[in-house]
Amino acid sequence: MRYLVTGGAGFIGSNTVDELVRRGHSVTVLDDLSAGKEANLAGVRERITFIQGTITDREAIEKACRGADYVLHLAARTSVPRSVKQPLETNQINVDGTLNVLVAARDAGVRRVVFASSSSVYGDTPTLPKHEGMPPAPISPYGVSKLVGELYGGVFHRTYGLDFVALRYFNVFGPRQDPGSPYSGVLSLFITAMRDGGQPSVFGDGEQSRDFTFIQNVVIANLQACETPGIAGRVVNLGTGGRYTLNYTLRLLEEFAGRPAKPKYDAPREGDIRDSQADISLATQTFGYKPHVNFEEGLRRTWDWYCSQH
Ligand code: UD2
Image (cartoon, rainbow, N blue to C red):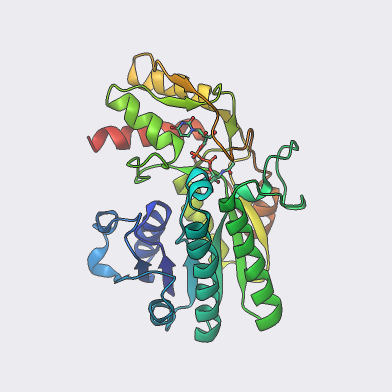
């Protein structure tokens, strides 16, 4: 099969591309390298087609979609706090860019678009775990942008018959997540701070919790969501079903590092959600999803990977 992966040089994208190539698929990557890195594709570079371009460029996305069976649309401007600072840019890439992808995918006659949505669409409602029947209530521009992507996909399904599936990822972490910006995922920041003898910064009391999901679970689910027939129009959570506080992750990292973390506690972050946890029964029902790597094991592997990169 022929896959187009937008954002394929990024963290989730490049890990997914590796698996697609391993399974013998033909892969095109469209990435503007704003967050992704060519180095993430080093192991497969000779076996894929790489287009440096952005989803906000209609010509680039049209060209990339040509001949594709499946589009995994992972390109996005991530980060809740960045979206609070730069709502226009977040909207331009995540909303306008996604609309471009949908139009191009429709016109190219692809078999399905799988869209990377986010747990942030649920907002800060107290009900846990979050299930897909709950009304979305995002509290950040980022959450809004992901919800709009889902809504557009649903409309393209109903109006133009485009096969579309949205996966609501819950705080994905693992090898290749870039720790290089203040907007990076918290575990990449905690791990590299601990590795380098620095102090992890905790925004708030550290008792907020997330359903941290190891990348390998997401990679397998991405493929299942593409290949499973008859699931067009579904919007599905993708997490582990558990919930882990930041303080708990620091205790595990202390064990791995063999020294105390000495975290610095700061004010809570704007737009932040307190607790997040996925109900994953719909993913199991829809495409047989099972998280194969649990949080603790995933964190251990991630710690080892960052240490090996030093
Ligand atoms: C949101 C989404 C997630 C994904 C991600 C993409 C939720 C629940 N999750 O992640 O699914 O779409 O956006 O960017 O909406 N923190 C610290 N210290 C740091 C950095 C972060 O304490 O140095 C805290 C932060 O305040 C938050 C938690 O760690 O409470 C997780 O932050 P994050 O930026 O890793 O991810 P989050 O939950 O905004």
